[in-house]
Length: 223
Length: 305
Image (tube, rainbow over all chains, first blue to last red; front, side, top):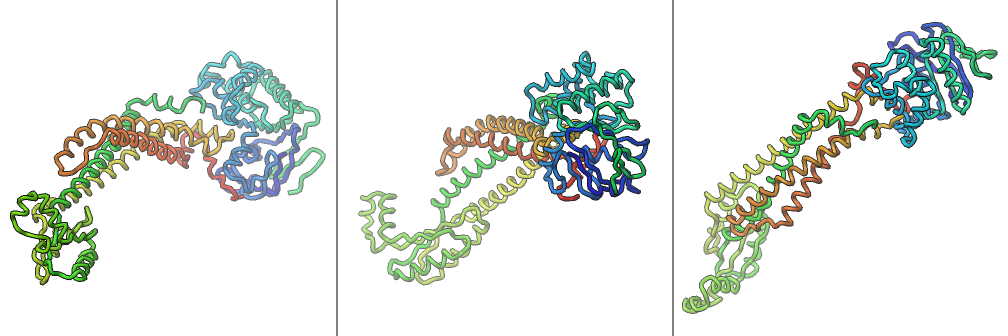
């Protein structure tokens, strides 16, 4: 479960808060989509939920853990339960596609079968042929697919995607969303940030972010 | 973590060899100096036993006065202990030195022998010349027949030798510190080249300990190799020192076991230094966020929310 209680987040460059006093609860095992126009703060919210930065104030619960008093080791354990892919994902250019994809598995200590899982993911996403190619030699579309594979390998508890699917060609986007549905059906919570809803999964929850507020479909969250 | 931590070391062979040689040389110097100091100490002790100061007292001196004088000298900071040699022991020593026949021909008996206060100074403490001067001043005491002190020139050489040893220890320690810094700088350079990987590892949940591990492993291996080199290079020095020690009256020769222990100690010391340096340098720092590595996640302090 992911929950924010009265959270204030400023832009990375500082200044006026992007979201101020925001509260939300995302239940475990559901498909969540956070949509909003460009510049509304989706990526900032993504950074906080994916534990890349902390909010200026408020309480944050991720994967069922209250992060207020976690030690660095405990924080690392929570991060191991997440699979995240930012809009501009950082990949290791000198390493091969499969080496990039197994990275989360290595961190989680699931080295046995890591390569098999990575190959299955790459195969589903249609980049298995690029398995042993250095990532820096791949085109942008394939790099994006490698990043999605890395975020989803090993079926993490929570998968958080920040708009990378919107850069993909329609056919490729369809493959990615199908893959996300597959891991969602396996039990992972999927959270997708984007400009438009995908409406792919039944029972999905739609969140609209605008003017520093977030609204759940059929329900308004008070700030 | 995706590859062996040593893979990145092997990609910079010249720098790696340089770091290992630097650390190995400093470890060797430390061990060579340490072993030499041990031998020097033994030799110095033996020399003091042979040529150390002694105060000869009248045979008629009362026991209480002898004891009082002994305690007075023992209270000096440069004095470790004072041994009272009674006339019987002095006579036995004379018999040993000249032979029983010669001793009997001298027609002396134990009652004619003096009581001797044998002064044992604190080794390596400054002030040998001053101690000799203070002891010589005891000659004015009524009960004192004579004071025997080492040659002043020998004492001043001892003093110079001690200063040289202290200077050498300081220089070698500074050099060792510099070598450790050199190894650390090499490890840090490797770690910074991997800052993108480290950032990603942190994003996906690598703990601080896990992030440090590759650098620590590199340091451990480099340190152990340096220690092994120093340990092997120490053996010829030990052989040379063995011969040199024979020139010091009473200095014990270094046994094969001693040499082996020193060498093993060097391997252990190299491993320990490398491990500590590797652990220390494996700590991520704010600089790691430069040049596309991503913002540092270290700002996320526990309890800061």
